[in-house]
Image (cartoon, rainbow, N blue to C red; front, side, top):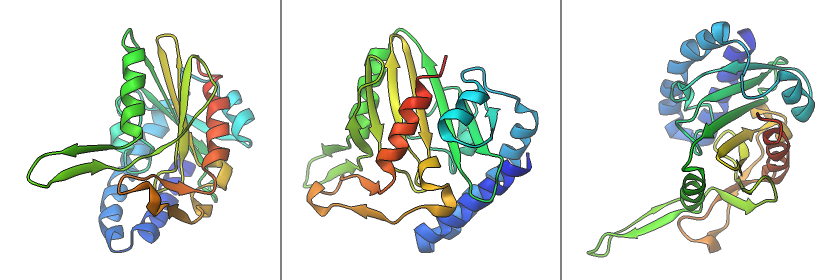
Length: 224
């Protein structure tokens, strides 16, 4: 759909601005998925996990909700795929394509949901591994805070497009919703900041993280 293609283009511009020299590589990565994502949007239909009316009601406005099945990796450069990366995914794109407001809705169901939630939370908090000979390998944190939702839940900080979300477990079902709607879309991504006191794997934060967390929790509650 037209709005999907334009949203991808807006995301591309923001990535180039945020990454500077690395923007060229972001350009190559994102431009390579524009056609694929737009094609999926044209034939993808609605999302079996959530009603479009619920997306519209929680995020405000009117959204195209696109089912992407298990092929979310195609759109990884523009979707927040940090959590439940391999789960069936739907992408919600604001029909007012001037702002680039979007959301990812991922749903996973399985008997290992408790263990997978714990693993996702551990990864989100960042890791440090001592590999000997004075070499330590660290991963950055994107954990924001625990929240009260379902049986277990936590929120993430914003990714490089300003999308932040919530992972919620309800029994054997995990739902990850990530959105940038609270910040007015990718066209209005606020300045990011890093707290040096958090160390090398401290989380990058946006001013809109908590507001997007609240939206994500509310939308996750509507996912079947």
